[in-house]
Length: 441
Ligand code: ASP
Image (cartoon, rainbow, N blue to C red):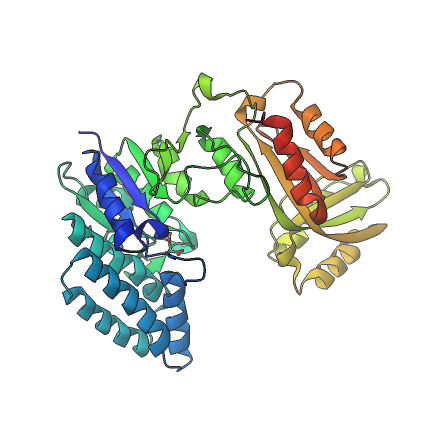
């Protein structure tokens, strides 16, 4: 039988009511045999996420401060779920042991991982599934890479196609066997690893929005959900700030050619967004593009030097200076005698002076200026490859909205066009681009 891996995010497992929805979703399709869960998320905007409380407890314990207050909130959340689901309170005794571990100074990752651990234990009990501890099967190498053998080991653990498994997301162990977590939101990665390990036909990622939207809803009113998007497009969108799905989670499923569907636990009838290796011809829709994503908070270091284009290795030396200082570069727009380097603004904190000094000393530019508060906006879509007029539409829309374009970049893949604008123009630019590509109604 084909299997589907279903991953539920924090808001989908925030309390007993939500976990009831999880149960109904799992029961609605026999192929949903592997469930991966996050730690309980927020029930209300002002509430704290369980993972945040766990980090807080760890840090307070490390300072020798009492963790009574945040720990009471953690155990209160779990106790409520146990009561709402009618589970055995025995699980709560384990929480007391965990508190002692926190007070003795357990590792930070271990502390954070207990949100997912207890969540999965409870949900396994409620669904009548088998609990799977990822620390026993997923090895995370330094730098966050997954040891390839994890797929074999986890596949072996999940081998029975008839059985229901419930695995904790967000963590694994390092080669020495210590618990380590992925970066925040990393349960998406765990779900993707489980999908690849089990050879699943589909990876469903259940969250609290009905798929990925064509633009940020804080900037555009009621943006359309994307019906279908390719792995390549989603990488571009995620990198440029479209959230919903952890960008590193794409790698394991993409390598195995397993499609992902993003769905809404609160509206299971909605189709959500399908992320596929290959777009169906029908999905190259009337909008010509998949979506618009962007981020503020970039800075541009602009250099001018006469006859720069004749100097061999100039760009290499320039980027070398950034590398030496551990500053990653995002884009390098250039003209004949000038080069600019775009970086995340926060990377310059405390380093701007040193970096500029070094560039002046080693490359002797005629001028060097740093521009701050820039935003990058990517218009993404495989449909734009060799389509005439996309760039014209973009720049006409920005012109009409009186937005000055500071940077233009189109990669050779022709999958996106990136424009850089002043931070103050960001929202207006995104709104204008959306209106230009998406017909109303
Ligand atoms: N609970 C973790 C976090 O809040 C991981 C996750 O939910 O994916 O980041």
